[in-house]
Amino acid sequence: MSTPLSLVAVCLAAALAAMAPGGALAAAPAAQAQQLPRIEGAWVRATVAGQRGTGAFMRITAPRPMQLVGASTPVAGVAEVHEMKMEGEVMKMRAVTHLELPAGRAVELKPGGYHLMLMELNQSLKAGATVPITLRLRDAAGAESRLELKVPVAAKAPGGGQGHGHMDAHKH
Ligand SMILES: [Cu+2]
Image (cartoon, rainbow, N blue to C red; front, side):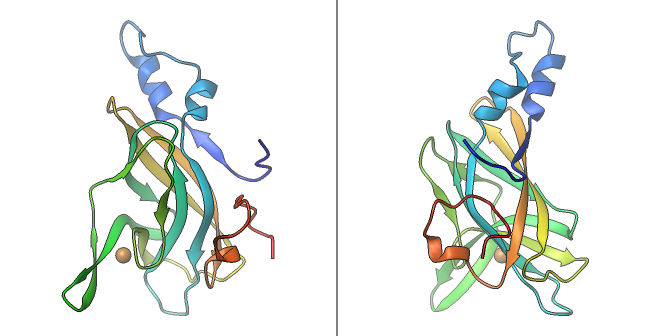
């Protein structure tokens, strides 16, 4: 495992379990962290001046059944999980309450499909910059955890989906 950069897992579930009476669910934070999803090929689409919204994309592989239930980032007032769908001839997008992450199967957030929608941007996002994004996840038992990412800003998908997809923001 070599993620030199920035894949910091913060486990709410462990904290919650620790507070639970009886502590039957208590587990070491490290053990919990290993059960969080693997993120590959993450990027945020760069914006132009005045643009208030953009999308964030990545491939998410959960080691156990989970749901992506939300996201947040300091650069946007609102971050939502969106899906895009053809309605008749028109491509429409809408917020979804959760996105299923089956165990061991990569779920792709990509242009034209599911994505994280970042709205009410408070700054423009230039290619080469890095944006912190926190994913909120829920497991089958209802325990929530958070996964903190540092996601590179790019004009288009990095590497055309090739390569091993680590989150090295500064590889060109
Ligand atoms: Cu959207």
